[in-house]
Length: 615
Image (cartoon, rainbow, N blue to C red; front, side, top):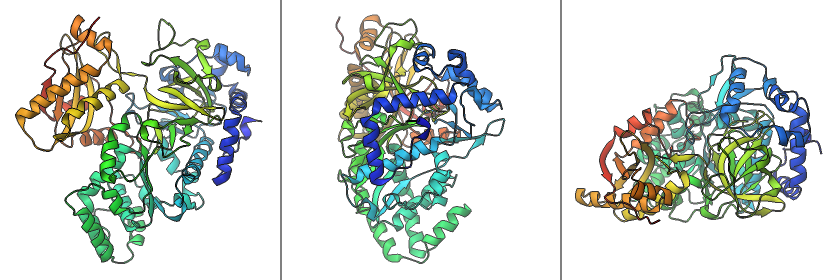
C-alpha cells in the first residue's frame, strides 16, 4: 500500500468499514505511513541534515532527534520570511496555522499543506456514523453547533496565518461539502464566517431558536465556549425574541453576510415562537433550560475531558442531567489523532482510539506523575532509542505523544467537540515532534491502542523542588471546592507561582458566585479551601511547605464576577481563537493576564496552617 494513495473520502458505513480496516492492520498502516513520509520528504533540508538523503526507516529512528517547538521554530520563521518550503516538506506550503496559545503560553506557528484537509475531513466523516450506532435518528433533524472564525493575518511573504478551524471553515471541504443529513447545521454559513464574534454569536443563537423544534444535537468546540453561549443567551434572549416576534433583525447586526442570511430566516413575524421562547427564558431558574428550548436534543457535543471537566456540573445543571455529554474525538491543530468509538461513555471514562492513517505515532514512556521513566540529564532531550511505536505500547502505562506528519503544528493538551489539543500542530513535516500530552493506555480497538487523556506534561506551578501539573492542580481544586457546596459556586480558576517574596507561594485566582454572601463565613470557607487544596497536592509540595519551608502558604484571591470573561476577551483580542479558547491554568509573572486578574481581586485568603506531611 502506498501511503500517498490513502483514501480519506469514506462516508457513512464505508467510513466505519475503513475504521475497522486501518485499526485491524495498525502496524502495516503505520509502516506504510512512515515510508511514505520519508519518500516524499527525504530531500528536505531538515531530513538531509540527519539522514543524508536516505529514506530508510531504521535510519530515521536512529538519527532523527525527538524535538520540541523551539527546535523547528527557526525553519518555520525562514519559510514565513519567504524561503522555499523544501526546508521541511516536499509539498508547497499553502498557509500557516497558529495555535491558540492558551495551553502552553504564546501561540505557535506551523506551515500546512492542502491535503491535510483531507485527513481532517476523514475524521469528521467518522463521528456521525459512530454516534448513530448509539443514537438513532440523527439524520432527521438539525445540529446547533456553534462555530466561529478568527480574522487572519499574513506572513512577510504573503502566506495567510489562520487558526486551524478558521482554515477548515474557509475551505472548500466545508463550504462546498455536499448535503449531509447527519450534519445539517442551524447556523447559516455566513454567520459562521462573520469575524465579529458578537454578531456571529447573536445570529447563530437566533437561528438555533428559530429551528428549536428540529435540533437534534447541541455543541461547541469546548464546554467553556458552549457555556459562554448560554451566558450570552441569558443577556440577549429578550432582544432575540423581539426579532422573532417582528420578523426584523436587530440593528446591532451590521455584517452584510449575516444580514442577508438572517433576513431570509426571519421571512415573516412569528409571535407564537417568540412567546414560547420568552416563556421558557423568563422562568426564575434556568435549570434544564437546554431541554426546554431544544426538546429533541439527543446529546451535547463538546470537550469535557482534561481541564474542561470542571464545566460538567454547569452543563448538567442547564440540561438537568438529561442530555448526554459527548466528546467524540481527540485532535490538535497539527493533526487529528483519534476518535471515541463509545461516544456515550461518561466523561471520566472517555478513551480515544488512535487512527493509524493520520500520521506516524511514537511514544515516550512516562511515570504516573508525567516525568520520564528513564534517567536523562535534560528532560527536553530524549534519546532516539527511548521511544516506542504505536503497536508496542503497554496497557495501563503512561506515555507522551510524539508525531511525524506529512507536512505540522504544535499541540497542547485538550478536542474540538472532541478533545482538542489547543496549542497544537497541523502538518507540515514535523519529525518526531513532542506534543506534550500525557496519555494512558486504556485498551485496544482491534490492533490500535486506545488512550485516556491525562493532562499536559508541562508543569503548571513550581517554586522549589515542587512540580505541580495541570491534572494534580485540577484534582486538588475539584476536591477543595466541595467545601463551598450549598453556599457558593466556583465558576472559573487559574493559578500563578508568586516568587516576588521569599519563600514564594502558589496563588489561585477564583471567580466565585455566592448564594448567601457573609463576610465572616467567606473568610472561614476560603481558608478551609486553602487547606484542602494543599492537603491534596503531592508529597514533595507538602514537604517543601512543612519541613523545608521553601514554599509559603497557598493563597486564594477571589475576583469579581465576569473577570474571566474579561480575561478571555483580552486573549482573543490579542490573536487568540474563540473556537480554541481554554482558560489558561497558569499565568506568568509581569504578564497582562496577571495584571488584569489582580485588578479585579475582592479578597485574599491564605492557608492558616501547614499541610500534613511525614517522612
